[in-house]
Amino acid sequence: MLDFSSDYTRSAHPLLLEAIAQTAGKQFSPYGTDDCSERARDAIRALCRAPQAEIHFLTGGTQTNLLAIDVLLRAFEGVIAADTGHIALHEAGAIEHTGHKVLPLLHENGKLTAEAVAKYCERFYADENHAHMVFPGMVYLSQPTEYGTLYSLAELQSLRSVCDKFRLRLYADGARLAYALAADENDVSLADLAALCDAFYLGGTKCGALCGEALVVPNPAKTPQLFTVVKQHGALLAKGFAVGVQFARLTEDGLYLTIGRSAVRHADRIRRCLRENGYIQPIAAPTNQVFVSLENETLAALQKQLRVSFWEPDGNSRTIVRIATDWATTDVDVDALLALF
Image 1 (cartoon, rainbow, N blue to C red):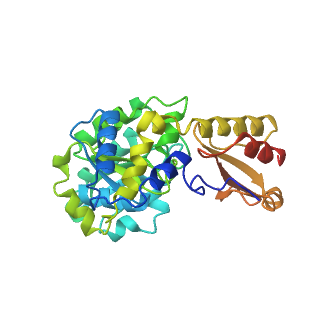
Image 2 (image 1 turned 120 degrees about the horizontal axis):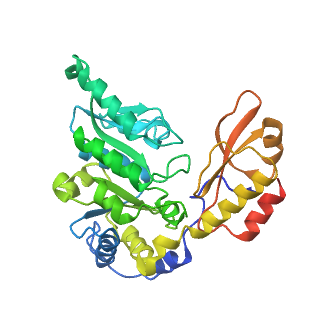
Image 3 (image 1 turned 60 degrees about the vertical axis):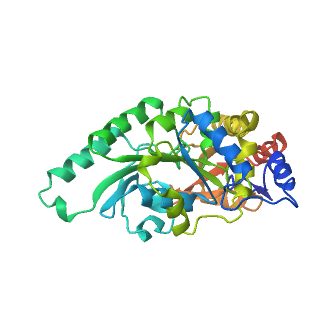
């Protein structure tokens, strides 16, 4: 059975597994205070050109999102997100469970626009009853989006301007960030994210790591006692080195900046083949996610040989599915996939 259902179904990149294996029998300082984690933090600061950044290694994306959003918001504030955003749809109300409301806005190809955020805030403050309402306190976005699309540098700068005008924090979910960095269309660097965002994270789980994400707060003054808050959320790993050693290797020799290239190349090949064979691709994504609309009967037949992710219905007789490549996808895998189409 071919499996293109997601980009976190593999174990880990061999270089990371080798780095983990080399920890056997060694002792490490607890809670991410070890030398491997410190080396990884220094490398991430250098990549982001953010020498003062506070960095915490966490285990998963939902954990990272709820922690970052909770620590950056005040008790009466909510977070603006695209209605297709991960926190709005696929995190089981984790953000609401912290006491903060998700404030969904209509998306454009998976993205929020600065204009939509500004209009929302203008309407909010024009409402004479806004003191009785949940205040917008943050803008959440993901790079790439759930639709595999990318924010341009100009779009992020526009969102930052709106955030500054309405005193909003800006947070970027980077679960698939390595695939965004590898896309030809991308013009946003890690340094840009550090300059524009109040917090963001480098995804590891979907980008070659066994598990783990690296939360980056460029200005630590905005999140006082973050270490203690991480502990309070049950997110402080006693064996923090287990994630730190992976990011130490991911950030060595520019691996994080290149690990997504083959995935994007394979996805481009799939998109090209589907287009040439007349398949409908409702979302033009330049990263590692490919979306195709299939007749339900065609999909049922394919699923006997192929695992893909359900995305959404496309009318009564069709379904949009997602095909995801990853850092370990091979030409042989793609050849077998395309033979089914």
